[in-house]
Length: 261
Ligand SMILES: [Zn+2]
Image (tube, rainbow, N blue to C red; front, side, top):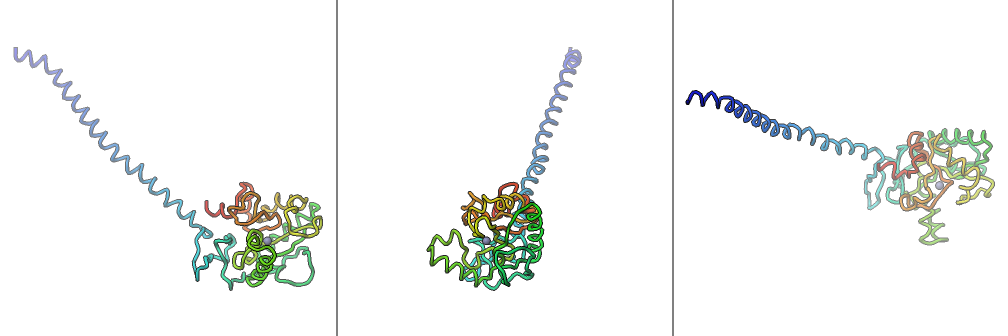
């Protein structure tokens, strides 16, 4: 009877042990799986911010070196330098390669206002050539401006407008014109003035549509005053290079937004 019983129970014992074995394996596996997978899952999560950090800390990222309470840009010679009310140029900064572009100006005679940095000047010549070929009648008005010239301009504007001068005029060290990468342009239709109505002229429309092809952006866009700190200026173009210009203009960004992505 005992042997018969054993014979009868043998399959059941075998099934039971193999079942327990399976559970054991499963449990082992299920224990191993998370420990094996966790590092795999966590590793990319930890790596992602590390990969993003260098992008955010690109050469023109929003970092400044504070000197005597003045937040100075560490890279004034870079084409993508970001200058605004929070990021200033040193008072002694003069761009290294200023030249006069061969374009039509609204005034005659020599002036530092006619100069720009070499790369920007060449790009401006190409932009003006293309605009003339398409029947536009644009003139350049004001390019490079020294720290001391900007100081005088701001003081004059402040005397006229008071605090509201801040919306239209940069204080010394805070003007893109000191970078040698900006140019104000206008046209005869509005009497060569620098005013909003330039945006409605055929030249202003052409400029907004085509400037990025030559590496320029409309720096102070309508509706972006909170970000740029300045009122809409359809006449102020800033050289940033073609790649950045195309991205900025097609996506409707400001330079601030582009550089902090
Ligand atoms: Zn300007």
